Length: 244
Length: 279
Image 1 (cartoon, rainbow over the protein chains, first blue to last red):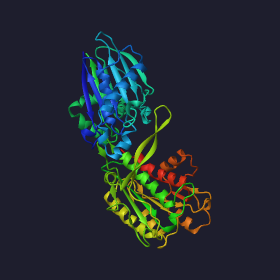
Image 2 (cartoon, rainbow over the protein chains, first blue to last red; image 1 turned 90 degrees about the vertical axis):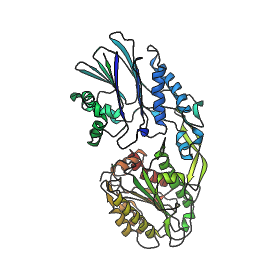
Image 3 (cartoon, rainbow over the protein chains, first blue to last red; image 1 turned 180 degrees about the vertical axis):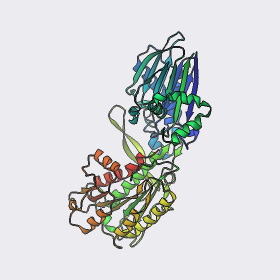
Image 4 (cartoon, chains in turn green, blue; image 1 turned 90 degrees about the horizontal axis):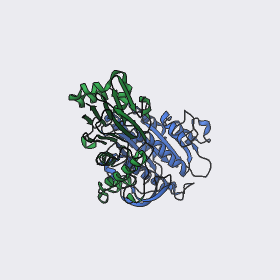
């Protein structure tokens, strides 16, 4: 059985409606996803939500080729994104930007049937990370050093907005994939970039345990980390999945 | 001086453009098809549009920036805001108040390494004027008063940026004194940045971002404006080098004899710093 806890908050000083990360969870089906919509593009929150919901609602078969899986996700999510925006009612300045499309990182996790040990596949584009805790060991993917999160990440592009729309095909960017196995007692964490960086920076102090210990006052705990400068002021999303 | 303050709605930044509207601005700008007044107006309107674009989010426009445009010489001896209403405007207000939009083409990535042309609306907030003399000191005094109020109200903001575009000598005094007063206006993140762009009246070689008087021609006016232009913070040196501009670490925010290409580059680099600090 997979037991799940989810934490998310917008940047400090921002409203929940301005949160541009996205996440989707199907604990029974073993499907999970997080995405970080790029602030620089408009409608990136809609794009991030389209990616995670498409992945969780229509997951690719575990044995499907990785790139083909992402191409299918991209095609389906683009339709959802495009249909989710009322293009013709936008003011002129929003149209100017919306035609450029939206950008987001993406990380999707599929956990196979409940046999022990369970197999999983994690596909990521960008700088959201997967952490695998097993006994005293911690593995992180795709980064193991927090300094690797200082660079501009790869992003999934929605393709153009109106008036070009879906008429042109879009290829997925480069992706990274990890296959692994979890056993009872293990924990998997999906996290967007700011909290991933903080966890990697503090990995010898079990930062994941600090989050769980402060689960009841998560929002103020993260707020204090941000105001002290320990964590970047960014949208924060983390999904903790425990295998029991 | 760090120039690293994050720019947000609660800690916005101020950009002021000053534009010479004297009669000589009706002359053609070398490198372009049109007059100096038209090219300079186009460059500033484009930049306002770019700020609008950058501040546009799914839920509307966020006021990361406040902008103003001060014209001088539109009538002999006069200087003042050439945008409708107040001198300083939040970017959301500007988004809703262009005097018109024009259909133009822009190149956008096609996702496969090529580009395609797309129609877009080019915002126009003011039209070019080339009419009177060059009351630059009067315009700078207006800018000084606005910046003084701004830094008092926003003491920890990204420092204000003043970009002055002119093709001639001030006709109402020596601008050095008032520019020095503006340079003393600062926030905890740095001094106000003063950028001076001297438009060309002839096709001779422009001098972009000089670091020493010896790089300039023997022109009293050029030496004067060079001396009161800000030394570029390191971030801006980096932006200029990314654009393949050869400059020294002590370069100043000044261009002498700018043609169209230098004018566009100058405004682009001058506004890149704050755009990179948007939260």
